[in-house]
Length: 380
Length: 106
Image (cartoon, rainbow over all chains, first blue to last red):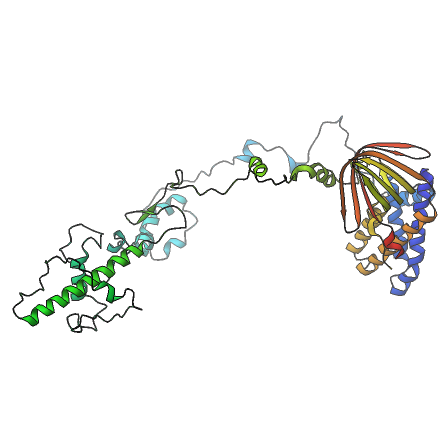
């Protein structure tokens, strides 16, 4: 049977070559290339052991090439001079005898870049600080930290000059909103254009920082107690003065309410991780103990069963893929056996499979077998 | 005319593919001509299997994996026995790739 397979293969080779000869000549490649193709093809098949014949032997002798040199293991190995085993002298060359004394030399600008050959590294090291001092130390310059870094970023108008009236030191811009609001009107850089005292007599304060936030109609009805600690309140003497004071108080109450609502809305929920804890302007975060669990869901088999979903069985094909990766051209023992054919019919009854194949090539146990018809019965 | 390219994965097909790869790499052959060679191989191989081969084979084994995709059946058998008029072969694991024979006759 092997000769039959070999004969069939040779017939295929001849058929392909003969039918392509005209095409090769038309293209202009020539007959020699076709012959080279045939020779190489047959040589490879002979190396695989699928064909035999006198033609292949000749081509094998022609293409065998130079045999690889064999080393005589009975003779001790003597390497060439290039590959001598390294000695201590080769690995650790003797240190130079020359150790010049450290002499403090005056350094000129740019002079440290050029060193005469006689100086060792000691001289360079000692002169480097002097050079740095001459050329300046740009890396050591640091601007002083800004005073606003210690303060809370939210709810603070950085343009406001805080008065001494506030009790806490450093941050806490909103601990006493009432005097801050007074100052807001009195001294603020943003409202230089507008005279804070010159607002409309009906208590309406034009807003210049965007659309209206809170309706003044509903808030004006609420009575918010305003501590009487402002130095701007004059002693009411006339009715007009009393009305003015009342208007101011109403305006203050409205503004306080606006600020309270803004404070409430200023607490923006954080969705991007742990609660940021600022300590002296530096965000501190302990990665070992998360404030709340943010782990990704880990599906387990139990969960899959609970959800009534079939397991994916991802590992079922691992062995199959490993065999494919090992390749099909192992000449010693073909690890991957293969059958290539056409199917005429494939049927199944319960777990019994039946198939009818035709015109197939089989590679089994390092042998090639051809068939014109095959019947298969498998149990799943 | 369409051809089945699956025979290129056989021993003879792989030898031809490697030869063509070498010749295209060193510039002896153009890629277009190499593809023509492969197509002609497909036709010659199919014709030779139809006309020059007479043997029949029976296959028995445990079906481990089956797949049908793009009109191609792929079976992976375990502990399969292949019987021929002349000999029989036993393999632990074998893959069978089969194309639809009706596609060629259309």
